Image (cartoon, rainbow, N blue to C red; front, top):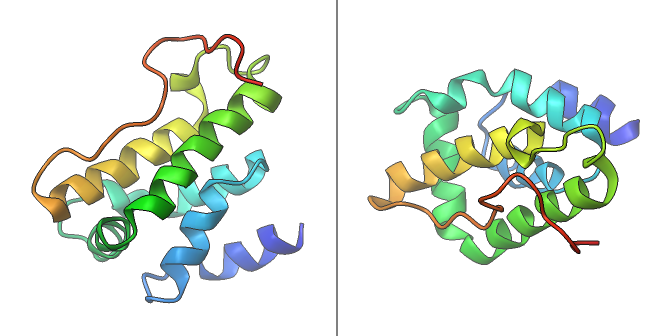
Length: 126
């Protein structure tokens, strides 16, 4: 709850120190944190917005960090939330990854690698 409380205070900021903190939390297992990030970063879907530019640039500058984050989101979904979200596409972490990849793609000028599962199930993942 401590991370969630502090996140709620800063998530709307695109200040350079906030972006890595928020991306790190996208890769966590706490569903409520993912929902706060998804709800508060609504402008992440808007090309040219402050969040879109800041998060996209951070991912372009830190591809290994974001790749690890993508793998963590998939892993936590598979281990803890597969029964509630039988399809990864319905999991809040998936929509966040889509938004972040879109922002990175815009900044990089090419599609950003998607490390999430293509199908609806991920057998033997945990």
